[in-house]
Length: 122
Image 1 (cartoon, rainbow, N blue to C red):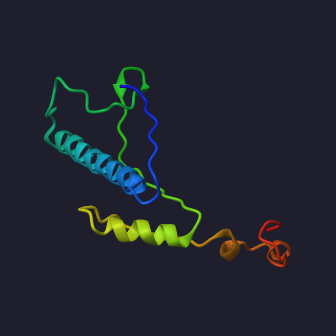
Image 2 (spheres, rainbow, N blue to C red):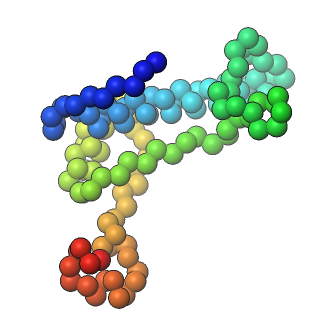
């Protein structure tokens, strides 16, 4: 119930640790959503004393539920960092769908910017 600041040298698994914790939360979220949907189909609450939504209310006292599973976006400065994280993630029990996007040098469509020789100017 408090915040902490941790420092650790390169290569000790900080990124993988945070990604795995985030993916675990996401799986729990999906399971919770599945439970909510099953309860709605059955027409009864499966856990009547436990609120299924921690997201607050949208209309008065009626609880609001999310139906989409949140997407996790991981960004890094270099392709080598991205490759390392993806390879390490394969060694865990998680297998998320992954989409690798190119850098701004590869995705920029502004011809004036693309003609610049310096990345700093781009």
